[in-house]
Structures are given as structure tokens and as C-alpha cells.
Amino acid sequence: MTRSVLALFLCAGWLGAADPGVWKVAPPPPASWERDRVADLTARRKAAMDQIGEKGILILYAAEPRNYAGDVDWPYRQENDFYYLTSVAQVGSALVLIPGAHSVRGILFLPPSNPAQETWTGHILTPPEGRSISGIQDVVDARLLNAFLSSLIPAAKPAFPEETATAGRGDRGTPAPPPPMPERLIAETRTPIENIFLISRGRPAEFHREIDLAQKLSAAGLTVKDATPIFANLRRVKSQREIEMLGHAVEITTEAFQRAYTLAVPGTPEYEIQAQFEFTFLRRNAHWGYPCIVGSGVNATTLHYESNKDRMKAGDLLLMDDAAEFDGYSVDVTRTIPVNGKYSREQADIYRLVWQAQQAGFQQVLPGRAWTGGADSVTGAANQVFKEGLLKLGLITDASNDQQLKIWFNHGIGHNIGLNVHDGPAIKELQPGMVVTLEPGIYIRPDALDNLPKTPENKKFIAAVRPAFEKYKGIGVRIEDDVLVTSGAPEVLSAGIPSKLEEVEAAIAHLRTAVKTSPLP
Image 1: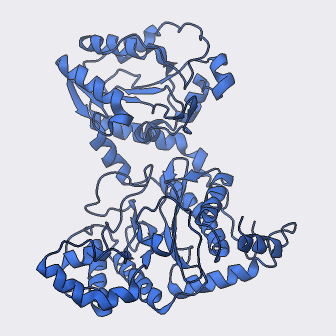
Image 2: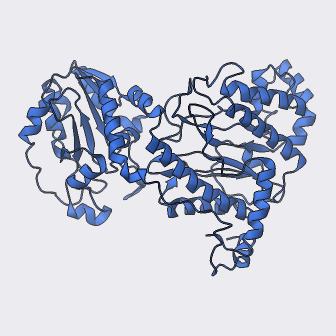
């Protein structure tokens, strides 16, 4: 801990109680978290089966463990689409949906109990637990999966060797042999299958089993269809419970930013602020939705700055792109604050421009509105503010030139969020129930002009903007909020984290004064 942050802790009298009138703590999760889970999952599975059709079958596998080093794996995170339909975070699981079956249309396959394995890596879900979590009543030993699929689709038998399901790294001990497949399930799922749906495209490291199976099934003359578009369509618009999960992730993120605004003083290493975020996420039963980005000074001009090792200085801006994931649902929030509590005139010029561009984008977050396109699209509205502002600041020479804008703003205006921090395909048209980010930014990288192609046009541009560039060089600002599309005006879920320049400075002053007499919670 740096001396500057330690001084704040000592001045706060850390044996005393935190003042609830000053410090805002994330509330407990909403009641819908557990109360409405099964109803939500049941509705999702029905919607998925409607798209699969009565002559189709969907096969989903749980994510495989990822090795970190030697005999240590990364913390396990379930494959998103599997989790979307089951809420089951058990490795070694699988889900089969058969819309045309007589009565049993969904079967959850779970790995068997294995006390020797559980001694090392923890509890393996039991069938009753799988039923309770997912709402799927038919839960079967995962070692019977391939035999079941071979029986249901005889032509696919060569693609389904005898299964030896495991429940994580180690394969310790030998579980009891699996029971026979219940005859009732075989009888009640018997139906003609013409289309086999898998996640048959994606990153090979994540979906190698599915890609390999799709190739084998296709070679056997069977019709394999990629399930990715089904999930992209289903996950685009959120249920009320999903919106509340994202809202709770925002509440946890808000508490973390409060700590960062308080403790990000001159002399503090970036990693200490990263620690404040991760501490808050973990103590609220959450996790980071993506690795924390804590970039001070010129590091703020790196979009996905990774090291978080530098020490903050008075006069620096601090860009923090950090947000919580709760029950698999990740939000995405960025704030850029002055380390010493006050923006310089040059920093304020850039900051106000980014904030104004975001406000213009907010006004276009309306149902039926295009994400990109003309001036009334979300991207178009923000870009127009940027072009006019950058021209006025002397950083571009032509307000109609998109390429000049991209020198300073070189990423998209936002994206969907949900079970992925970048959830689903690119946004086209906004619909009520979508939750999106709006994240304009300006990055004046010190080497930006040096890296432009050496064309006559660029040489002329560089000469024209050089004075402004020298004035603003090294400044990076991004402001990112999470926005719910409604039937009317948008709802900014992360509005509780100050972002307007005057409100940021006021919040910093208030919190850094308060911590001297009242400890952080």
C-alpha cells in the first residue's frame, strides 16, 4: 500500500464504523434472482425449441476447464448459451432439447458423484440440485449421453463413442458404474430427427468438441445447423429478471467506483485501484466481467491497457474501465477522473467534448432507431458532435472527414451487454429490452501523428493540427454507461456514477474529505 493511500486509511480511523449517510453500499440481490430463475429458464428453452422446430435437436455442452499452470485450472466459467438455458455451472454437463418428442423435450446430463474427485475440487451437483437450479426434471448420468444420442439418431452412432464424463481436472477415483438409461426416456423422446443444432462455429479453443462433432455428423450425411444465430436472437432482448441482474451488477460497480474516486490520489499505483474494484466485486458475490483497465496519464490513451503497474501523478487523468459480473451477467462502465481532483483546462476541453458526444448518443437510444447510419442514428449523432468539437479544438481540419475522426476516436460507440460483456452480434436497430453501452472516447496518443502514412495529404493535415496536438498530447478520455432501451426515453442504468465534469470534481472532493473522518465500508 502506498503512503498516500495508507494515510487516507489511518486518517479515517479504520476501527470506527462507516457512515451510511456518506457511503453507498450495493444492496442485496433482487428477489427475482432466485424467485424467477426457473420461470425465466423455462421460457428461454421454449423459445429456443420454437426456433429449432419439431424435427430438430439441440445439443449443448458445458465449457471445459482451462488450465492455468500445471495441476491448477482457471476458475471455472460456464459456456454462455448452456448457462442461458440451464443456470448450471457444473463442468462435465450437457443439455439436449428435442422439441418434437412426445413429452420429454429436455434432458440435463450431469457427471456422476465421485467422492475421490470431490475431495480435491469440490462438490459435484446431484440430480436433485440440477432439477432445482434448472427446472429440468429429467436429469441423467452424463456417461449415458452418447449412448442416448446414438439411440435417438442411429445414423450418427459413429460420431458418439462411449462416454466417460468427468467433473473437472484430475479424473481421481472411479465413480460407480452408470445406471441404465431409463426406458421411459428412450420411448418418450423417440421422434424423427432431420436437423442437428450445435454451436458449430466460434473459437476452436472453446468449441473444438462441437466443431469436430459437426464435421463427423456432416460426413455421415446428417444435416448440422449452427445454433449461434438462435442464441444471438434470443439473448438480444432481455427479460425483466435479466435487466434486474444487470442492474444489480451496476450497483456493485457503483460501490467500487466510489472507492476508486476516494482512493485514486497522487502516488497510488494503478494496481491498488484495480484491487479496490476486485475487492468490491468479490465481497458482493460477483466477479469482474473483463480484466480491469486502470490507466493513468498517457496509459489512458491505450484502449485496453493491461499492465496496471504505473504510479499515478498529480495532473494525470485516470481512466478506469471496470465493471462487475453477477450470476454471469456483465456490465461495462468507464470513467475518467483527475487524480488530483481537478481537470486542467486542456483535459476539460477533451472531457466535455466526450461527454457532449455521449449525451447526443443518449438522445437517439430510442426503439426503432438505427445504431449506425445518418445523423439520427446513435453513432451518427455522437460522431457529429465529435467532428464539430474536434474542428473547433484544431485537432481535425474537415468536419466531414470520417478518417480524420478515426485518428482520435478509433472504436465503436457501444455494444450489447448480457452474459458476455460484448453480447451477441453488432447492433442494427434498437428494440425495447435491449441493454447497450454508450462509450465515446478521445485518445491523443503521443505517437499518433508519427504513425500516420506519409502521404502528401497527411503531411498537410499534420502541419495544420500540430499546434493543437502539442496542447492536448497524452490526454485520453472515455466515458461509458449502460443503457436500457425502453418504449420511450432510455434508462441509464449506471447514472449513479458521476460523469458530468462538475459532478465528478464535486464527488471526488466530497468523498476524499469524508474518508478522513468516516471509514469506507
